[in-house]
Length: 536
Image (cartoon, rainbow, N blue to C red):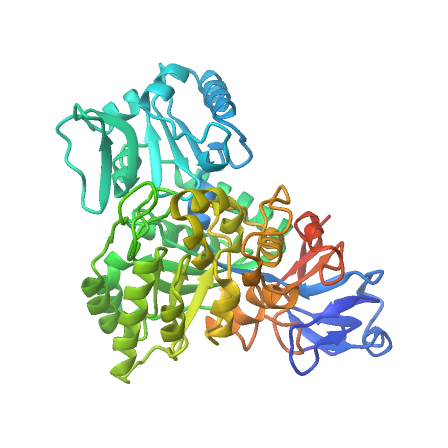
């Protein structure tokens, strides 16, 4: 490493996330590495006439954010779809679909994502007839914010060949009325019947959208992501090919762990793949399995009935997941298991207890449980006994789910998003967005974890605030904890000498401001690989 800095950031409030040197005033970058961290005087002494010197004016500096559960490929592909995340009513949804249909012209697919009926005054999920009325001459399919439920109109259903006689696919539900006619509502893998007939974008369009998405990620301070597969694994091979092409063409400007669908376990083993294989830009991630669905679709697997539905549903049988994990574990392939409902978490934690009892793991990188959205106290205790497990939770989903959980689970909502209790188990707690399910901005996630409020600052005193994290705990969940838990702690996660220079500068000190202002904080500068890739 050179002894002269290419970039120096000084006069700053640097919260390094390095336990040995937690605070500093300045940092020097040489190439893609951190040359030194320390006082203004020491660091400015490393400048030459060619060094870019940036006066931070006491702004807060953190390591680049790491999002460990981001459906990035899906997010990028949907750049041209309707974004319902800020649509506040059923009527606004209707207007958005109608306007998109007019803009696209007759016969073209109208697609949208992110509606959350539980926060609409009407509290109504649309059906095929609503969409027929709004866009009678276009096939339409729109996805709920959790991606576990979609709604198609009659033209969309016809193109997907979904009718009276169509049986439910494995791990999916085609909702039907009392006469047996599909209502347009599709749950879990039934939505893939629509995905299978959607026009495929060109590879050039996919790569262009992915590069746009990376640019937007930089605006949020994201420098590393784990790109996670959706259920059914339709995008698994295509996503990996796209990431590899960006890398080959020197167009990959974010660090990425690419997850593989659990259905590819045998192929991955036969190819000799293992988690962490790759370089500091692109790595093979985890095998992804689904034990249940989502609470919004009432498919999250519960120990007690929903107030307005049955028990939800298991998806991949736990015994099948266990057999696959045992095989994968022996070749160094780590797994992540989606578990939302309290029954799903109970079963998956018990599964990992059985697996750890074999005491012969070969996985260096811990297995993971994703979401842990609702967990009972007795299962938290069992979670604390696991030695080779990390947890990835999505606090920003909390802001979407408050009304829905109150409605379908009532007082049992106290077991949902139990972030503080999960942290107390000692299991590494990684925080993430689940985008496009929720806002990909880590500052919005930190806000949600700390305040337990919706983005509109309600409820005023927060929701089950005993489970709130401190700002320090939440920041660790987006920086050093995921770096260590995913095997990259030697080079990422803190602002430390010798580590890769992924660094962000914020316009407000989130450790000192009113927590309600955290979500409004902006990223002024993002350094990735020692280069400034975003400057506000």
